[in-house]
Amino acid sequence: MSSGAVGTEEKAGTPLGLPRELFWDVDAGKVDVERHAGLIIERVLELGRLVDWRRVLGYYGEDRVKEVVTELRELSPQVVSLCCAVFGIQKEAFRCYTGRPFPRAPWIY
Image 1 (cartoon, rainbow, N blue to C red):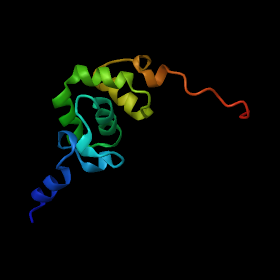
Image 2 (cartoon, rainbow, N blue to C red):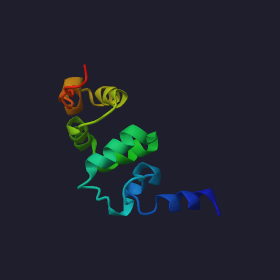
Image 3 (tube, one colour):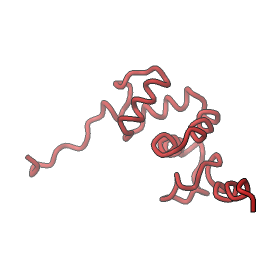
């Protein structure tokens, strides 16, 4: 079997033809590209490759990706910095950056 066929089989049934490894904890066949845009974009930003990033940008467009990433509750500092550089926005625009985390438990000093 050629390497191209193997790659196709691995990505069959995944949203936007993204690698199955990005959706290890969910049934990739049930992920809807419109309803679950946040999940898809977050997974690609945190764990995907450049080709995956290009595929997501090509499908959703820059404005939709920017809208989704600024509303995500959790993103690593590296991804926030990347998005700031790519989209030209400030860190304060990100919900994950400005939102308050869970309050400290009373037994933590």
